[in-house]
Image (cartoon, rainbow, N blue to C red; front, side, top):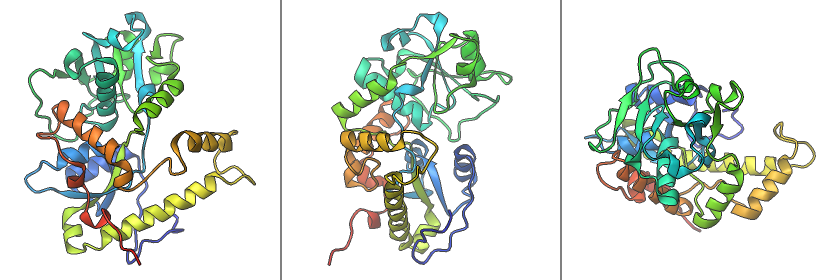
Length: 311
């Protein structure tokens, strides 16, 4: 964005906006040549008659999502199995964060996708639509909330029992004790999850509009190389000890801890390094009724980014 890194042969006009706006405008109207995109939305777009986008294996957003399950304290939900039979809010059923949450709850805790009833709509503002149409199996129950309702307020007031989301709801900061996290010790739990699975969940990828890609196949590799260079620069900057790169007092300690647990390339780009994580997500998408068949990870990325030349 600041032109410190320039992709070969491409003069980018960079529009910096909230991801919800980026995704909406790209998925509904295909407004951009290149865009960050929800991994779940991209996977669903692969089932269109003509695939509108092609992705490169760059992952600007990753997030352990155990911390993103919120519950109304009055419901008595203390552990994952208590979610069974409950009313669960989700801004969009197809959004990536809840796909990971539902998959982890199923794999790790035995809470299946159809063990709860879902309520979809705006978290803080009413009338949030699904960005892509849903065609779910009948055993998965998703209801739209009312035109004046928000999930954050419904959680606070006990109209839903839990919320799977990406953004922390404002009601979490509201009256003391009404809304809490299901996993208050989420850091410990997420570290344990990574040690067992080696999965650092991928939230977003980078997509190219299909007609742009077909007209200029070389841009996939050019973009991938530029993103990889930017990533390498950030790794170096985060390890700088002369001055902190971001306003986090123990940043260097966090970086060192991440490297001890996850390796030097703890936020990896590329296909081979992320194949297991991608295959897990593609299984979740299929199990949750979003994908019409289980895709293989090789199917979703530009082939130019799957291998590299050697000298």
